[in-house]
Length: 269
Image 1 (spheres, rainbow, N blue to C red):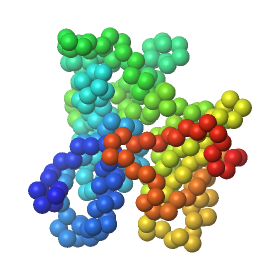
Image 2: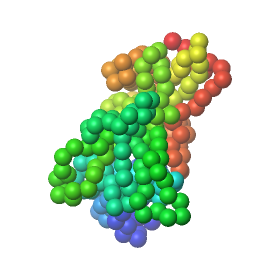
Image 3: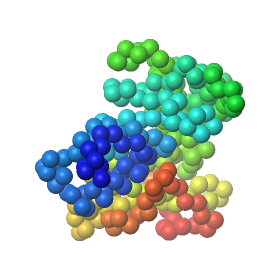
Image 4: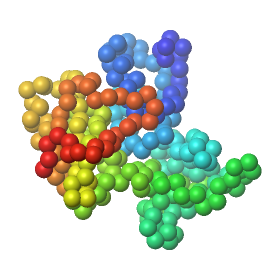
């Protein structure tokens, strides 16, 4: 339908855009050599996503992938969005006043320092928000954008403060896991983090998915490379399972990355 109708822009979650690209690979793997599509822009948001996933989506869909940010308590999508330079999200600062606070001390952070985004609405009348804690991790970017727009810019959302896992004393966010997995060429960006408690602390196991074009005989090599990438990125050893292609559940809405279990799950380390 995208090809038949000459669609030029795609707006959805990054995980759904990934699913579109996977289905497209199945039904038309030579689409670019067959004339491609008119798709130019992807406006993607509603969940944190890494630069690695952005690169894969741009390659698979032939688009410029732009990040958009919003939350239903404020107005939905449109609180902030990247321009074509992909150099931070321009805040709609005629409608919202952004602040960054430390999530524990609640003190304001300096520009460039990461913390929790707090928003105050300026124009909303029926449902205003005043210093609303979004639970989203980002920072205000100093300096001007190359596009020349003087509006306040925030960095791409790095995750939610309430999504943070503490694994053997190390803070782990799903967005960090995604970034590490996207650096392993034989994996798709689909994964699940199984979480359970051990002595009151989080223990995790990551199930990721072998890419269809990868060699099934190299699963152990892929697993070892994945564990190394995760250790380098997170600073802690994580147990990894490599699933077969198209076996990790997909979502048509926001991606569900964390599954919590009351009992220990899989192999414990």
